[in-house]
Length: 498
Ligand code: G6P
Image (cartoon, rainbow, N blue to C red; front, side):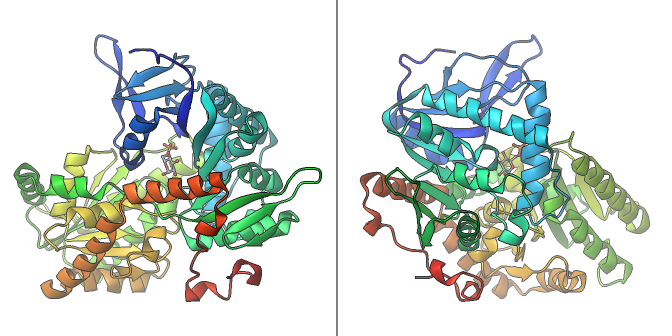
């Protein structure tokens, strides 16, 4: 662990979680390991060339750690107490904003003490960033946990260029308007120079909320922030669909040891004709129950046979102290137990269920082993699992069943698109996926792969950062408006159209 030699960074990323995990070995010695996210992979080259720092929380309560360097990235830890974790993280971030922004699939809690702590913790992140950013630095704030940081930073450091990216959906105004602090959040975000969203629809929802809650004029892709006594500022709000480091998934999938592991996995499952796979954080937005219901009914009706089809469900533990997540776990595990009890045989399990995460090697082997990937989210900002599956299938095989309520479905049109609420439709799509002829599988997968390999996470970050650079220079003429898809024309306010 070395301390940075100076404290002024030209490029700063701010996110709730740091890109490193603290690992304590048997002897009690702590070290840091890089968490395997696409974001850090994409930003690493920028970090290295621009002398970058990453501000965030180390994932455990009350850890007061000095800044340190990890594999070329300067890490600036922000501490959270038990109280902050309960109120800022589990409370306002994940029991208010998360359900609200995902179409109120679960009921959001609106508690004033959660909000007060959210303001306080956002101020702590802003202060930590303001203290280490060089004069005129570029700062990129990530996600819904930190929506007040852009404005707080701008007030402290008007010299900075500030970007914000929302990784989750931004809800329609009819839903967003429930939030008692709806105006403060909008004003918080508008402290940025560029606000990025996953889908065009998210950027449209945001601009509509701006119009309803402020007097600022909006014209795709700009918002004119006019405060009396201050020069008008322009803020860009547009979509930048995120992706993965696609080439590294393909590279792994091409390794013989991973392919051997994929064969082993199928063998372990009793070599069924079809392996179906679900991979999700155990979250109520993911539609895991809908998927299990459809599969259970297909087995009950004899349209599928347990000797022929196995479903593997990887459910990554997540936010386990939040009540809605505890309840979801109980529901899912009860359903899995019932399906296995009703349909399993001595040699074949209907659902192979795993309540833990796996390293990337094992995930890629699973992707290769799976004939069908089921992504049935009820609402999802993007869904990177869908893109990981496609990137891994260099053999042009495998079928992606994809919910139309994911951001990924805007791009991955050649998947089998489903409405997960329509259980009969979902069942038909599952059967269609299992029976799809090899030629059609290959045509669809080739088209999906082109899309994912071309638009990787490196392109995402460079598009965002280029837009931020144009905004910094005031070259707004170089920032193209968003092309609005046909289906949005009726829902997008005229002032938001070109
Ligand atoms: C989503 C959010 C991320 C978050 C991740 C894991 O992908 O967009 O901001 O980090 O879930 O959730 P957690 O609560 O464990 O950070």
